[in-house]
Amino acid sequence: MRVRPLDREILRLAVPTLAALIAEPLFLLVDTALVGHLGSVPLAALGIASVVLQTAVGLLVFLAYATTPAVARLLGAGDRRAAVRAGVDGTWLALVLGVVLLVVGLVFAPAAVSAFGVAPDVSAAAARYLAISAWGLPAMLFVLAATGLLRGLQDTRTPLAIVAVGFAANAVLNALFIYGFGWGISGSAAGTVIAQWGMAMLFAVSVRREARATGARLRPGFAGVTLAAASGGWLLLRTASLRAAMLATVFAASRLGVTGLATLQVALALFSLLAFVLDSLAIAGQAMIGHDLGAARPDRMRFLTGRLVRIGVISGMLIGVIVAAVSPVLGRVFTSDAPVLRLLLPVLLVMAVGVPLAGFVFALDGVLIGAGDARYLAVSGMLTLALYLPLLWWSAQVQSVLALWIAFALGYLGLRALALGLRVRGSRWLGEPSAVRARPHA
Image (cartoon, rainbow, N blue to C red; front, side, top):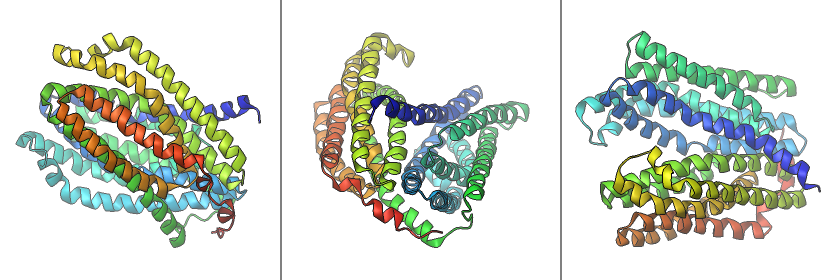
């Protein structure tokens, strides 16, 4: 197999995915910029509400991560109709979960906000924002699942186009509602909800077009929805372990005082930005590995895994060099506080060293998701978390944000790299392609 065509195929999927991933945080960035001019109270309220929404939706990202490999496996097996059908079942599951989240959001929004212990005016504004935003949750989850369907069909350009339209609509509507209609922070929530439902409708058109082209039914199938939920359950547990590790790290940093916590916040923000680049490679891996599994090509799966790992590590090395080169001035983009800048410099240098390791981890994470190895990812994720917590406790005793970052960027990611690396050295992760073909047509 020639390397160059395979690399082009990886980039064909990864580059549009990267653009779409970057567009997602831009939604929040635009909202923040528009609401920020209303004053500190609405801005603080947006910050609280955004944390709640991002946590809820972040845990349900499995709707995309479970759908992509499921669709890709059936597509690789030569059954495009069953592939589309599996994606349709995933979108129905997303709508059901979205309605459940809507009800939960409407009922518990005030309690979720009050848990932060903020001032009454901030709490009231945040609860109002959440109550309006909850109506967009079914659309948000539908978009996740539909994106997974299209990625599984090896189409990453359509999601990018729809996200770009949604981003533009969100910016225009928010400006109109906040300032034109004078709705304040409520206008920001309303504009985002409308943009989310607009995106959902565009994705629905794409899903319907694929269904009509293949003859797949659009009605929900109980067996398919149940299968999607079962597969997604393991990925939910895997994601929960990642979120728990992040929250535990932030909690440990809170013991270091304001300066230590602020330093870690800047580091995490930068790391999250770098993660988008590496995550686009992981998503490409999900689609391609899933396709090869369905096509019963284990040798190509191994070869592709090697290429993905190499690209991930090399990308991490390039990013690391850039981070190290700009580390003396990079912190000033985020803060002018001298103590934070002093603590941040060595943290950024450790980050630069650890990014190649992150590239290795992200690539293998995408490979195993694509191979349907969700149970291993969940179990190993919980085990890794259990091993990381004592290491985190030790770093907290040192009372150093640098020790904390070493524990996270090298310790936690190192444990994940070990768990994932050991898995792909064997053959059990390659799955059973025959089981994919045995799936009954819907």
